[in-house]
Amino acid sequence: MIDRKDIDALAMHREKMVQEQLINRGITSQRVIDAFRNVPRHLFIEDGLIYQAYSDYPLPIAEGQTISQPYIVALMTQNLDLKPDDIMLEIGTGSGYQTAILAELCAKVYSVERFGSIASKARKLLDGLGYHNVMIVIGDGTRGYTPKAPYDGIIVTAAAPSVPETLLTQLKDGGRLLIPVGSEHTQELLKIVRQGESLKQESLGGCRFVKLIGEYGWER
Image (cartoon, rainbow, N blue to C red):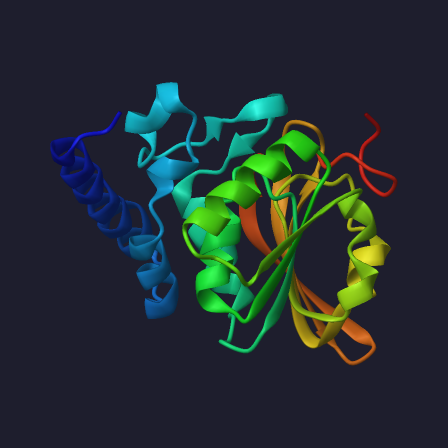
């Protein structure tokens, strides 16, 4: 059980994370910075690791998955350039932390998670925090989620061997896709913007994520 003193200490660690890991590294969007201040990251961490919640590295969660390093979450989120009325697709709900950040910034988040147990835990936590603009779907994220397509933004929180065409077809004109692509051990974080029938691609640097499993990703 976390007492009042611990809550205050965690809040201080959260502010330190924002200053040192985000602002000092070039995260400039005030809306993104405010979202990171609002979302209590420690609630999305496994109990035994709670006091590492605001550290500068990823942490393990259930089913061999991870909660990404805060800076990577911020970098991907900032590059989505979300507006308050945007509709987002997230591939890989995981702990629900990235989902909560997105929910702070846009009108609706559709999030696809392949593990039912992870999805259930994230749903309960997000509901408890009042993020009712999130719908979690259990399924193969490499297929996207066609019932609500197209999307203003798509974020993929696992690494694919190549960019799934299924996700590209679900982007609106002007929509942004953020996805790590590469081998099992090293990847590039790509930003892809749809411009009519064309796609503009930009590399945001190296990264490392767990594998994106599915029909248009890695095999199990």
